[in-house]
Every structure is written in C-alpha cells, then in structure tokens.
Length: 296
Image (cartoon, rainbow, N blue to C red; front, side, top):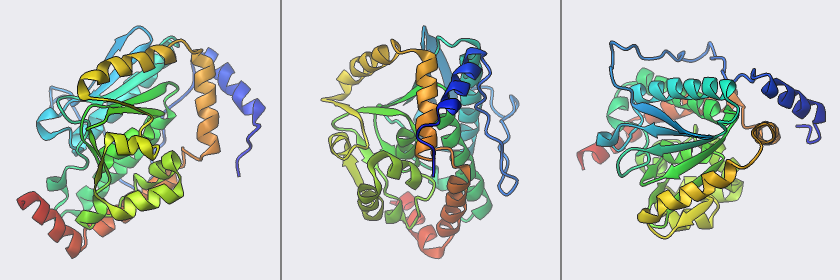
C-alpha cells in the first residue's frame, strides 16, 4: 500500500529539486544483463538524439530506415540520451518538458525481430534493457510527452504508454500484436494497465492486432488525437507550450507522487516481465510465428 498523503515525501522532493540533486539513475539488478553504453568505436552516430528549445527538449529515435525498431544499439543509445537529459534537467530546472518521438514516418515498430531469432540470451538482454529504459523514462523529473508520429507497435506502443502524456493523429497504427506472434507482452503490460486499467488492458493484450489512433484515444491509451498527420506538429506544440507554463518543481514533485501511487517504479516487476517474455519468445511456436512474419 502507498501513502497518498505523503506530505513529507513530497516536501523532501521539492527541497532536493531546488538543490538540483534529484537522481534519476536506476541501479541495475545483478540478476539480469547489466546495461552497458555503446562505445564511440561501435557507432559514430547516435541512434537517439536530444535537442532543446527553451524549456522543451526533444528525444528522437533515429533509426528511420528500420522504422525505429528497438535494436540493442538503439536501446543503449536511448539509455545514454535519457541520462543526458536527466543531467541537463539537474543543471537547468527551467528545462522541464520532454517530447519523445521517432524519425521518419514511424514512431517505433517495436522489437527488432531479426535480432531475437534462435537467441534466448540476446532476447533477454534486449528485453531487460527495454525494461530498465521504461523505468528510467518514467523517473525523469520532467513531463514526458510521446509524439506518436506514426506506427507504434508492441514495445514502441509500450514506450508511448510509459510517457506521462501521448498524442497522435487519427490514422496512426498503434497496438500490441505480440500474442499474434506467439510472444508474451510482459514488459509493456504493466504500463498499459496503468494507462487504461486492467479490463481494457486485458482486451487489448489478449486480442492482439492493431488499432487506429482514434480508437486508441477512445480507450484512453492516447491522451490527445488530431485529425491527420499534418496537424500533429501544431497539436504537440500547443500541448508542450501549455505544460511549459507550469512550475517545474511542482510538476516534478507531483510526478514523483503519482509514480508512488501507481507503483510506476517497480523495477522488479518489469524485469520479471523481461524474463517471462524471453522464455515465451524462445518457444518453438513463437520462433515459427516470427519466421513466418519475417518471411511474409
């Protein structure tokens, strides 16, 4: 159980924020693969980029040629980018709104399927790295807005649910088709449950498939929907401009309290999900379905 009226906790957050010392680093569990950043020798170009404009930062998944599918390299670069954002926010409390989006026409096509064929260890490493990333994003002391500029599938849709708010256009394709591929969406399931409630999450996750941005808005998975893709920039700008008028310390303290109330920072839960997903993904049924998908 969580204390709703944890006044002293909130006041301590405000005090620590005012001193610029709120920590967002999440200690790695010794039971799973540790996160290790990519070296410059491995890739001279980051797959996750950060830009800032006044109080608003934009974190972009920069793997457009693969529809921003979640490879291990992309996930590691996202970890580094979120760490960078956290450090910037600690130095400059006027920076308190973050937009998460994808380069190109897709937000994120989910897990890189080619990387997990016949490789349980790599699948577990990838899923564990994703699990830790979700906690890290949720813990950022800034309001994070998912600008879902196109397809958000599986783990990509999970990233949108991790964010504090999500905006997309009516024709975007979003959802969790994992069960169609013989995969258990255990890493993203906690985030969808928190977003839409247990009943709706059951229907979405057990049914699989995709839905439109409009349908996702109707069930609460998306917070704001605009008529078409051409309206998305303007709509997102309006949302972030409004958020930027809020008090940075108050927003950060409120977000921390909300995270406590819904158990958002339960790292053990999403890491157990990573193990479960990797185990199910390695079954013959899942491997056969994945091959059929890739060959189709």
